Length: 486
Image (tube, rainbow, N blue to C red; front, side, top):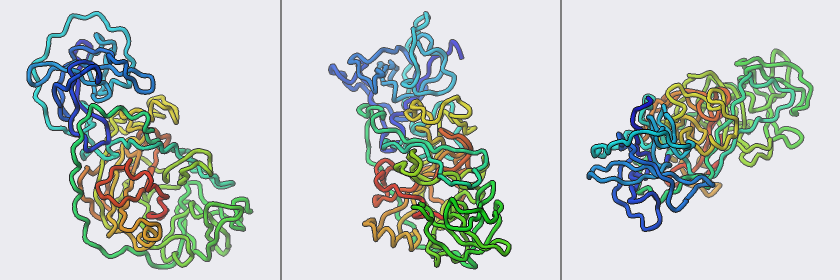
């Protein structure tokens, strides 16, 4: 790749689907009477870098000064575009970047001393093209469907830190897999948006017709979903004596349920195992049958989207339980396990391909040498701010379980829709704007982004605006238990 030109693609601010164009300036800054000489559509590619200069006004983000790239324009002139709004690939040695082997946002590269090189002749004007995917890198291979929401990415929203391990004394650990949920970018690190052009978002499609609720039936049972088995204790207390064990995927009849002792966050289920009775904690099992009479959950809730998975981490948004905030559930499993849409179908508001994760869906922690919580990941749209490949699906209010509607009505959220993020995927099987059928495979369980072990990060937010983007409904964040069975 050495000796090849440095090729630029316009990508804009990730995860903002209403951003369609980027401003091209007359000089390398947004101040000092820098006029807009052109607007280029997201996805415009094949632009050859002619020069790179530091921002003339020393404008910076968290201490890092923006760089500006001079590019040829369709009208025959040239202009300047800021380094947080583009991808580059090729030989950038003459500008101090060295060889960039894969499409990368140059704001996150370190610029050194330029290498001596012959001047590059101005390239012929390049016609603007329609975007293939707002944030898709030039060389990236789109997984099955176009890319996502976050969309956008990126949620510009406040941080959703690393998932917390649920404290479970004396309970068998979750295999060797210790996944960590990704962190949403803090608003302060979101690149300045003055260089993007906003256009109205198209209205969402009309809600699907009301369908009959999906309600389980049959004897109330638990299925052990801990890879190493479930401890069955003498009392509903994590410190209670273990009377027997339930192996992974074994079932047992439910006899009773009650809140755990000593301010335990979870409920406990009394079960019968081979003639012995004891208590098992609700997060360690999956429920089947008519269990709602025990007050644990309602039978009409959505099933866990990754059926062949086991419990890893719980919802802990403030970090009160573990000290590490976590905005969703984590379910560990094997790479490639199918990820299912809800039982009544839904609408894909965003599919987001992780540029740096690539089609292999790599882990920045295990395969790229980063540490969990590394701010370079949290601030990097190339890693989707740590979420890896992900999909956001909207489940319209009229398709929600009756028990969920009752809860929404009681909490001043009447008519709200459910928005669900499925993160750290291996593959994305759907695309933005697609209506999914009941139980359709929307992706596969993976280990992409800020992840340490294959798992699904499941996150739920409610919002009354069907067109809302993920950051706009941050206040609607709730435990996935409001919609899903464990």
